[in-house]
Image 1 (cartoon, rainbow, N blue to C red):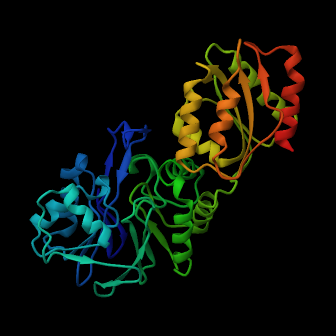
Image 2 (tube, helix red, strand yellow):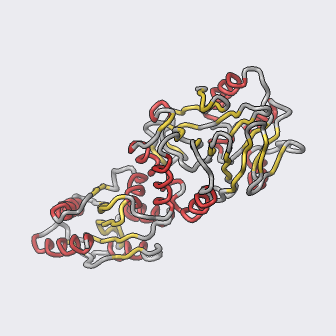
Image 3 (cartoon, rainbow, N blue to C red):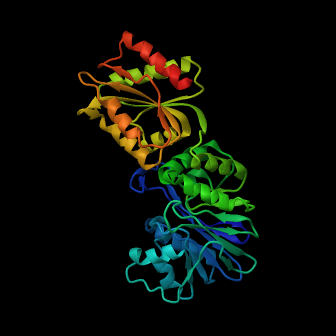
Length: 394
């Protein structure tokens, strides 16, 4: 699809509605978009390419938008293959094109394209460098580890456009999300899942990028995934500020349980009822054995408090809970309050392992009491559940 961003800037990205798992791990029932842009001026700049899965469609969009003209620059903001798969093709097809990227990206190129000839074809840019296209000038800002080390973003001042690489991205093809979005809870839902699973570990680096961009007058954000953001940008920027600082977005409690035969599930559901009865503003409950684990990671970061309920298993913790906590470790989970419920028929061990996995996480506080049940929730267990609910709310 070719669409006008402004009279001088076109969108030439492609939708991938057949993709089942993004990065072979994240479910994308609404598909994925691989965004690419074209700036027309005295010089023409192609802003990133696309994934090889949609390479032919992207080439058609490029030729349609160029309408016989030849590009002068290919700007590579991010070397991940879903955005750079057509770099070698661009250099072969348009001999006069100069590839613009960070030094780190240029170093990576031969890893993805063995034998590629870059001599005399590249321009390495660093923090604050500019590229004049005519009336448009791109200013480059380095964004290392958002979420790869070679990433940069670019700002075009005349039209106040931010080409933000993977930042401000979202799961979902354009055909599902719409081409442009302003303030929309639907955007936030899949943007949040995207952020915490793709960039969640790198909050400090995202904060650094936001600080560097704070002086820019931004009218439109053009990410590499998901819709272009063109209104109420304060809403999106505020969310990124909250997410990257590991702040609490929604007051409430996330209850995540891993149950083998249903006893732990019943205890978790009863505990959630207690929270609601005590006036907890929001209670989100997930069976992590059956839920999208990426959504569970999202909710763990969204709320300031979390309660984990798990069965004991092989003298440890039931494996879905172990996997979930491993993901939280990997994504930099921090600054949260956590309660624990364990179930064990003869030798409860789940709480011990959950504590061991939570302990290295920064500023994670485990509240008492830790509740132990035996096989099934019994009447005598209810006071301890009530006490945990009161402690979590407090």
